[in-house]
Image (cartoon, rainbow, N blue to C red):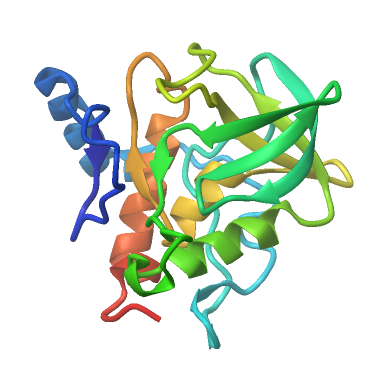
Length: 214
């Protein structure tokens, strides 16, 4: 299911995944309204640098998300980045084997690399933001519940560790306004923080929630 507080940005080929339980949708919708009341927990990287909502548009540092995790708490494995596919998918090496990794809990616009003319608004900006967040750190993948999605991709929360400071890349992309929240049970470990980030990004008019696409 996709939880978004404004205009939706779809992903081609994902209609099957979006047929979800209506009762759970109501729970997440309620969470969107309440997530801002969660206890604040500092995420070191969330407010360290100025962010952009589009090329050349620099904003003030983004506040830390209430309830944001500051380190992985589940099973993890180290990986080596091969390339960034788009805003929510990467290719990595794990033990010498190349794998596609789909980020849990969020969804970014589809770039449609075969035809740049058909890229969705903010698709390239989301891809660039993903690459920026992954640069220069130790890549760590955290498993929630499911191993893979229907397309055979690993489902993971993606972390970058730099000098002892952890960034949950999934969450940071939502925080900066490059992604919607898109969660599917049972992989909902960080849903409250994601919803709080979505709400803050929408209210601040960042990225997808700005008046116009870059």
